[in-house]
Length: 285
Image (tube, rainbow, N blue to C red):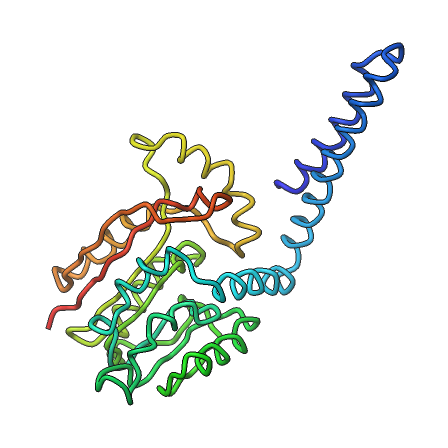
C-alpha cells in the first residue's frame, strides 16, 4: 500500500541520516537532518492522509467531491474539447449521464434547454453514486438557468436496473467515468439497453498512454496510479478506447463507432492524465 511505503520511506531517511553521517561532521549533520526531517515530515503527512482516505469510503468520497466541485467552478482549456462533443447537435431529447459529478457538463448544455433554441434536452437523469455531489448538481442546474426536469439516481453505472425492453434514452453521456467504475463493460451493456435506435453514447475519457509512442508518460502514469486510485476515488488508467471498441463489436454491427485520441490541455500537476479519447457510438436504426 502506497501510504505504508511512504511512512517507511520517511523513517528510513531519518535512520539513514543518523548512521551514515559521522558525529564529527556536526554542522553537516545538523543541516542534513533539518532537510531530511522536513522531507520526512511531508512524506509522513502524505502517507497518513492517504491511509485515512483509503480506509474511509465516506471521507474519501467527500474530499473527492470537494475537489471536483472547486475545479468545476473555474473555466478550463479542457472545456473547449468537452463542449465540442456535447453541443446541442449531439445532446437532445431524453438524456442519461453516468457519473454526473457536480454537473461539470452543464456548462455545455446552457443552450440545450426545452424553452430555448427549440431543441433539446427534454429530460435528464443523473446516475451519481457519490451523495456528496447531489446538492452541487442541483445548484449548478439552477445557476445555469436550465429548465429541464432532472432526476438523480444514487447508484453506480453497473447497478442501475435496465431491462432489455427499456430502450428509451436518446443520449447517454460518460465523461471521466469509465476509469473509475469496477466493470466498464457492464456500464457499456447498460448503455446499450438504455439507448433507443438512433441514440448516441457520447464518451470523453482519459486513457493509458501508449508505451511505444510515449514511454515516459506511460512510466509516469504507473508511478502516479496508486495516488490517483486513492485521491480520485477509485480512478484507474485503462485502455478505454480498446474496451469500448471490443465491447460494441459484439453487437453485430448495430453501432457506428467514431472516436479520436488527443492530448488534453491539463495543468502541470495533472500532466499524467493528458492522453484522452472522445467519441460517439451511434445505435443504428
